[in-house]
Structure formats: C-alpha cells, structure tokens
Amino acid sequence: MDLDSKFVLKGSQVTIPLLTYSPSSQNQRVAGYEIPGDEQPRIYTTANLPSSAEMDAVIWAAYRQIFNEQQLLKSNRQIALESQLRNSQITVREFIRGLALSPTFRWRNYEPSNNYRFAQMCVQRILGREVYNDREKIAWSMVLATKGLVGFIDALIDSDEYLENFGDDKVPYQRRRILPQRAEGDLPFARMPRYGADYRQQLEKLGYFSSKFGGASWMKSSMSPTRWSWQKPPYSPAARILGQLLGTIGGLLLVAFIVAIALTAWGILPL
Image 1 (cartoon, rainbow, N blue to C red):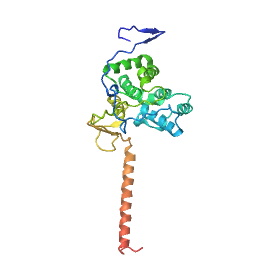
Image 2 (cartoon, rainbow, N blue to C red):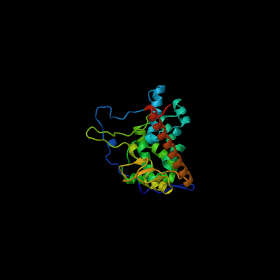
Image 3 (cartoon, rainbow, N blue to C red):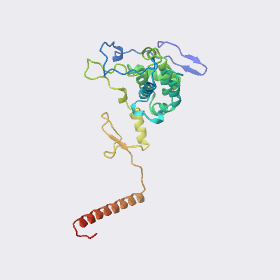
Image 4 (cartoon, one colour):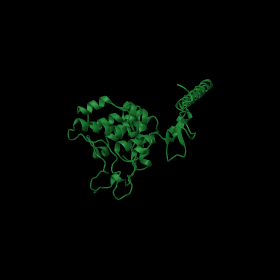
C-alpha cells in the first residue's frame, strides 16, 4: 500500500497501512553461487520427518533464533508448544509465532525496548536480515503501535518474505551472513544487546548498576568507555564492622595455626 492509502476504521480501532520503504542491496538480496561449506548457515527443518534427536535440534535452533544466545534459559521454554510441534499438531512457523508471543519473550525483549528497537530486533530474528533503513524501522514500529504485539508478530510471520524464505517447515536464520569475496562477513545478530542505552540508564537510576571502575565486571562493551558492574547491596555500619572483625580474627587464627605447625616441625614446640 502507498502512503496515500486512507485509514481503515474497525469499530474504535484505527489501523495504519505499512509504509513503503526502498530495499537496499543487502547480502540476502544478492544471488549466491558459492559452493556450500562450513561457513554456510545450517538449515533446520521438519520437512523430512526428523527423528527425535533431529527434532531436539530444530527446537533448540528455534529458541536460539528467537530468544538469542543471551536468553537460552530454562525459564524461557514453552513445553506445551514443544509437545505440539513434536506431535505435528503445529508447524515450525506456528512454533516460531508462539515463541515470539510468549510472556517471557514479551518480558525480556518487548518491555525493555522502545518500538523502534523492538521492530529492528524482530526483523532480525524473524525475517533473518537487518532492516533496510530507518524508514522500514519506522514502518514496522507503526504497525506495532497500531496493531499491538500480536498483530505485529503476525504481520512479520505471515508476510510474503517470511513464507518465501522459510515457509512452514524451516527455522529462520540469518541469511547470507558470510560472503566468500569478503574477508569478514556481517556481524551476527547476537551481538545486538537486548535493550539499549536508554533502558540501561533507567536501571542505573533505580540503583541496579554502578559505573565505578573495578570490582566484578557485569558488562564490558567496546562501544562504551565505561565498565558496568553490579552495585553491591547496602549493609548497615554495624554489620560491616562485625564482618571486618570476624575477618580479622579468622586471619589471626590462621597465622597462629601456621606458626604452630612450623614450630612443631622444627622441634621447638613439643606435640
């Protein structure tokens, strides 16, 4: 639909058509003639009646693609969806839809991000490519704002691009990340943090982070000049003094024990 398309009224809801944007010449839009090798992405599919072990690999690849390697947690598992996929009650495409609409994906990815960042993240993980430009990012963010999370995810998974590249049986993957003519390929989407600097600043104001140098490092990024570490929990002065006193007494006892062992070994102190 073009920009001149009118709004469509559905009761009290106003839907905005997807804005037009110009696709750029990214890797996945370039025809490939290279010989398949180890650098090519592995395709996980259920088209050939996979065995139990192969189905485990398909499910694991789906979690890694949607939740990213940063969020491969047991709490993110959707056991009911896994059972339906194993019993051929749903397709891989419906499994991907269920993961993207799960409460844990919403909590860990949608809520900490603004609409622009979340739209970019979902294009990466569901369509397997980077957004073409800021206009596409704005276009999908408007779909998210008007149709909500469910309508936005459905628009991506039901799109012609998704169906042409992955269909009902393939797990989405980052398409043509490596090109043999280049020394380095595109960075994997796993390099993109799940939330941006704006949300990190909100967490800092709430006291979750400390920008002091030293201590246990929580995150060190080449994009930022600072090192972030978990802020130490507050202790009362009395508890801090008691801890220091116990540490001192323990150290003195350890030194006395070592000295006694040495004197006994030299025969100065009888057993």
